Length: 311
Ligand SMILES: [Ca+2]
Ligand SMILES: [Ca+2]
Image (cartoon, rainbow, N blue to C red; front, side, top):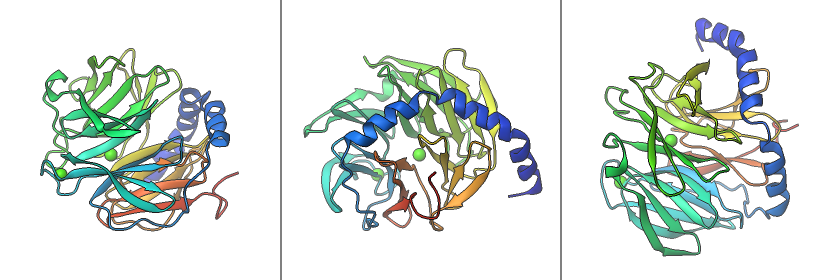
């Protein structure tokens, strides 16, 4: 971290803590309920042999779903694997470049390059295009993270020309019936370059976003489209996770790191050095941060009960 970044972190610590506390208030109760309701089927053992894994999510029954891009830009070779008690099996294939995953009710939603796919968790043959590419206001280039709010709305980041100019990204809201609205793009705010990780608050009024090009974390007002700079220095920011104790975790794909961001705004690196820490997630019992290491082809588990990572 440069001195400038360090100073910025210091100056913005209070703002960050306020933003997280304000936007995520109420999450603790919900997560605590789920925590006790779920029997974790996680051994903490690293999963290997995955094909360019990007994102992971744990269902209420403990199963973990992982999106695998396989070859970037090649259609039809993407897939979703399911992990149960440490055993990996194929859930569904025939996707393009699947990335962000979110579960609403009995369905898994997948941001698959240019469209959103909806799959029945209990029967993967029930798979449909929930939002086609044509429904977006601009043709999607690189649909990336998916997030849901308690009202059943989805949010998706299009990271734009993420591997080229690093610009052209857009953030969209998708209602439960599939209606798409553009929330913000680079014309509305220069902070929006290649938006990646999304984290919604309990009301859907605010969305925390980390940008892959700038490493800036910002807060988006989903009603007004107003974008507020919260913190910076996250490199190739990818995944955002909230723990009910107030700690936030942010992954840095480019530098292979996972940061814990305390309520005081202090950053701590957690877990080992990765090749490419993609879209992280937290297990239902909040014991592990799941880290898809895209280049290593692995899903790692950072045990938060070790090294004083939980209070
Ligand atoms: Ca592919
Ligand atoms: Ca991502």
